[in-house]
Amino acid sequence: MESTKLARLFDRVRTSGNIYQNTKDRLREIGISLGYLPIREYFTRGILSPGQLSKIDEVWKFGDEVVAAFLIKSKYQDLDKIENIQQINKLQRFSAKKKFVVNVSKITGEAQFNEVGFFHPEAQALENEIRPTFIVLVKSRKHGKICLACLDENRRWIRPIKPGGFGETDVLMDNGKPIRLFDVVNLKLDTPCPIRHHGKT
Image (cartoon, rainbow, N blue to C red; front, top):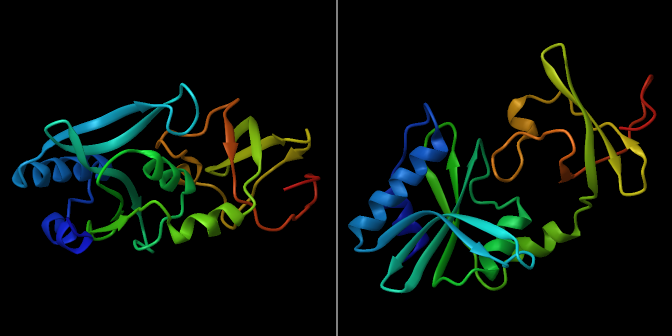
């Protein structure tokens, strides 16, 4: 089960509607055609932290054995890169013969199957990035964009910003749900940029 073969079988999905759902449907079709039993939204306990449930978007089983596991991410570019260390950690600790992060293009509907093994070279690079923990205490809208204000681990107010402002897709968590008040999140920040009316950003 090679990445390139899976990408050929996948071909492309419709980018209109729910691309995440369209991708799961295509993976199911491929799994059945290869003689496997596809299971959607497979939950397992304790692979990230004791007692915590984790979801694998799709698994293929043959008898009692999980032969493949897939996590899905839709992206505009860099389909050959995994930018979420939690996805890597989740798959590394999950028991399956083959494990993939499936990056699907929001533009073309094509997919890149990025295999995750016991050691993944991007994992260390991602671990080295500064991703502090925040609790979201303010979420508001201004000029059609979303504004966030958070407290960091040292109880300092932080207001993340980006050029052009945050849109709806910029404030989605790893599970695809929008950030809500009192969520605890990890954010990758670049450079502190204090501006008028805001002490921190």
